[in-house]
Length: 68
Image 1 (cartoon, helix red, strand yellow):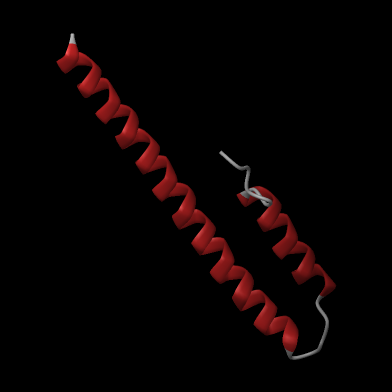
Image 2 (cartoon, helix red, strand yellow; image 1 turned 120 degrees about the horizontal axis):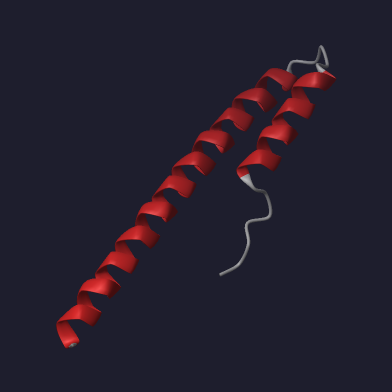
């Protein structure tokens, strides 16, 4: 399985570094909003992936028990 280019922690660090720059330009606000979107998407993806892996391993266990 390919590793994500950014782990959730790295993404948070990246978002924090954007905030620390704190440029007075209007784009910094947009960056923060898109950062929050990315963060919530990542969280959702991580949770969904975890659920999927959990379900597929449960399914695999059930199927292997049936075949015995």
